[in-house]
Image (tube, rainbow, N blue to C red; front, side):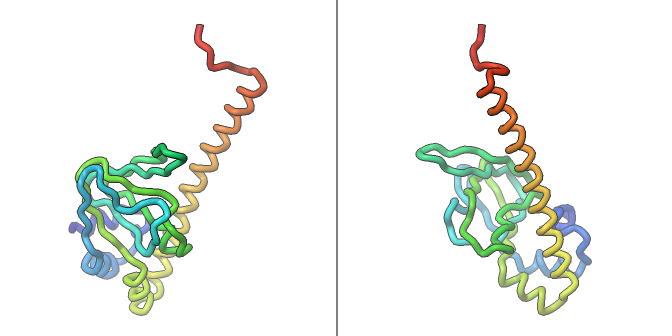
Amino acid sequence: MDSTLLERTPIYGGLNRQTVDYIVTHAATIAVPARGYFFHEGDAADAMYVLTAGRVAVTRRYQSAEYILAFLHEGDCFGEMALLDFSNRSASVRAETDCTALRIDLGMLQDLYRIDHEQYTLIQMNLGREISRRLREADQTSFEQAILTHRFIHGEFSLRTT
């Protein structure tokens, strides 16, 4: 895999060449065919992924329906919460096209911690920043939905067409 893709991802930006090469060398490359899943909501989690080719949908289920939360493309990462909170997967990730991704697991990052504290700390800070950015986007979407709900309830607009 070309290490420049990893360097362009927010979580791995700013790392030195030696660390990027270490991650690329030690990460497993996972291939998932179109309509296959990297993981499902509720699965145990111990790794994150950097999409190296293809397009995925991040989904959640409610009753019997699957809802798309986001589409991700080459260079995007997913599953990163697993490296911070050790909880089960909060969403599923389905390949929309044939995909490949680097699988970066907790054990590899623990090894990096033993090798280079500063680079490990930078990754952790970048993870926090990326999760914070996504939380801000989710907050904005939630706020906009609350406004629409308020306006609908108070009769400021209706869904009827004339």
